[in-house]
Image 1 (tube, one colour):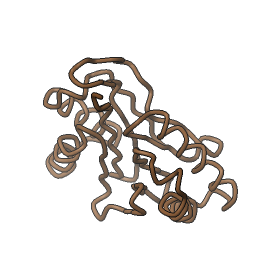
Image 2: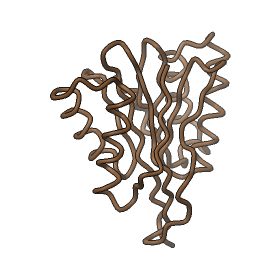
Image 3: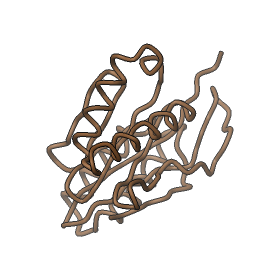
Image 4: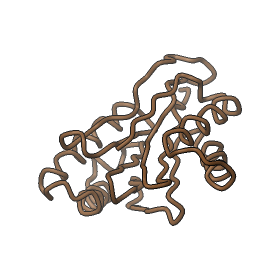
Length: 177
């Protein structure tokens, strides 16, 4: 069976702002199945942004669990992320899910993976998905060599990734806190 490739998600903390964005492309093998998917969600009364990459149903299941953890831990992104990662590694059903999440609030930016990783970037830039490496490289260059704001960096870097990665496109959405 052909493998789903879906997405480029990029988070940037820069100049006092934070933004999270994603492209809209979902592919199955070498076929574009959808070009305008929405992969960024606001959680916890809009104070937390979450972007996902991987199998869509798996990502939605993880986001629901992450949202429940946020409620359990009064909106603490690091605590909710750590508890979700623990559950993800130890639960027999969750372990089979193939997705990654970036969660962002005013103070934190974390990558949560199914291998139990909870990673906070040292440079304020995180990317996941098929075009993630392209977007991350572009964002690092833009942060270093331009005066763009966080949302502008996210949009420009995702456009660059969309030009390079066959699993990404130019249907870009950017949210900021």
